Length: 445
Image (cartoon, rainbow, N blue to C red):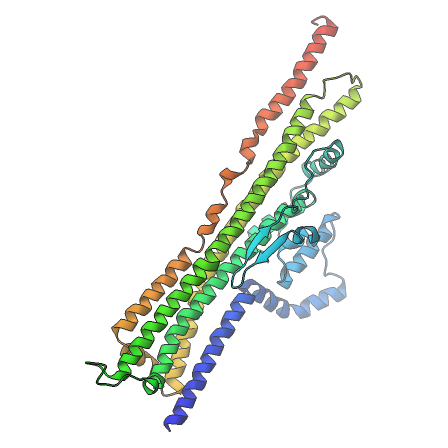
């Protein structure tokens, strides 16, 4: 009877451990949103099939860009790509060739030299290409449509990605990849630490309740002092498992997680600094070119007007790019913090709920008494376990300090471009030259 009960207990314990492991794998590989998207797609399959047969599955196109919007929406519902990722596209073989994701339990993102596609010098040909993009942006309509199935920050990111895809897709792609990697690390940290903490409690309960520790105990009652040898063995096993759990959590956090997160944030910030510095170089070149339009022997007024328009568009285009890149950085930081907060709350809550259910199952169907066993382990184990739990909470609450590496003061920001003063200087220079020639040719009339 005792052997049968022991086998049942071990089977239940193995089943519970399998359930916790399955839950951990599910949390690591999926999130709530793809699950909801899949359920919605399954629920609306008959209706979408009928609409497709009737030819009503697509909206009437307002312009050529709406086809891309439809593709983005379809990708978002599939749960595989966000709106932002669909807007960025797939042409990132160059960028991936200069990115490295390294690590064992956690990953960090390394950006190698050569990642940046933007040329070092602003040539006249490149300036004309940028003028086309600037003219298209400044004359374009503001997109007010939004997919209600998406999160707002994803909608905002997709708008920025679609508007600046041709000029800045590399830096936008890097920022998005950094977000995904850093969020994945937080999720893995919460899962690993929850597995460790839950495993310590479950292991001590099962091994003590089934009598395994008592059966394997080499300590005699005489050597144990005021308690039995089995109780002393349980205390040693409990203290040892708590110490081991604390050591493993400490090693995971300080050996991989913390330095890897900081490395990823630092690599992203460093590249962003270099990228905006090059944009600033081009911006300063455009300013110099704009001021020198009226200098020299050129007398063709049409050519002078075209040159002035070209460099004025470039000045505004560079400033707009910096502005929206910083807006995108704000978006990415918000998503990292928000998603990480969800992981740090809901992953431990899910494990706590699963552990409570598992202990209740053990108590109901195996004849074991896990809750009584926890109390019987004594105050020493309970105190040590709560200390490990406090360490668990400390590590999780400290998991977002790596974002301190992304500091706006490190790069050239939109406000440091002083666009208002620059435009005033350029327009003032043109007005000064016009006034000079009017006075010289017209005799002051």
